[in-house]
Length: 377
Image 1 (cartoon, rainbow, N blue to C red):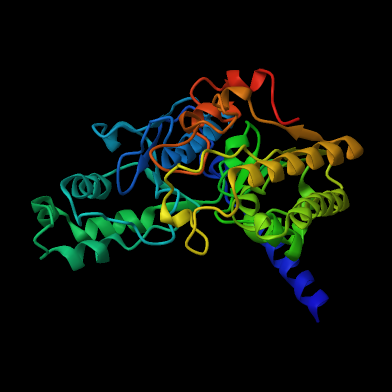
Image 2 (spheres, rainbow, N blue to C red):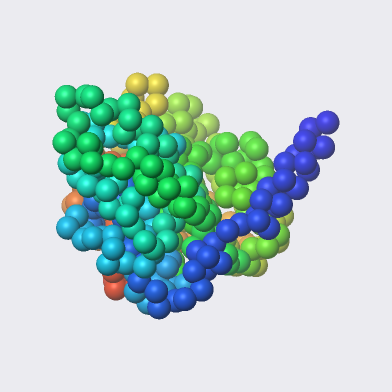
């Protein structure tokens, strides 16, 4: 029975992949003017912003798919200056917009622009939320902007209805797969599958092939390149709950088991990414990153030792199988050999800042820091 269910699931996801809708399917004119705009707020261009980083990654994918005029819109820019608008829901969007403070002036002005936009409206990986319902429920709230009164709800509904969803910018045979840290290892030509909260343990438990299909809709049989980046969450929250000897052995076994599962996929070009070093314990983190009411488990020294074992084992299995181990630049470290707060997203985050991503999104080239000597290898 279990085998039947797994095979059925794989078949369904493979069918989903064959039905994948891409931007290159929808927009063949590569010279068309495309704007990427945040639906609920302006997309941050700060290099240390996690939400903005995902939007910059999408823009870079568009550029490397051949589109020559792609812009992330500033607050003052008008939608009507563009032929196509890709609406960005936010990196944590799960079906509902977070309207902090209610229907403010800026949000209402955005909806007024949407209802009269003559071009094509697109949305990446998400259906449009019910904007008409959101406005209707808040019209009488004291915090609602006066601009809400001039929104034409019928025209707004037409804009929602005409918005087209697409799954990926383009379909390729290359995939960067992992947890919320993973797209920091994106490079052009790669599709990305970012899965917040994903642990290496769950990948191994459920099976790598099935997990990739389940999370990304991509059949690994069609891949020629795989960059795999998972493990930081296991190190931060789970592995140090074991006795010292057991945690080190468990770390080795998990990476070796991962290598076995990857080897069975038959993908020719494989990269495994090192875990990032551990930041000082004084780092303030958002509650969303807590597990069992704690921001981490284990001392800085314990977790750093696990990182070392994890990365050493990655190096070993990569050498055995002829794969590539990707390390992190030494410039990310402070004088105590900790992950520097300056190398992390601000103000509070567990993620590396876009300044140290593998790919320089603005200049569309390899990040200068990733050309330097690496550590933990």
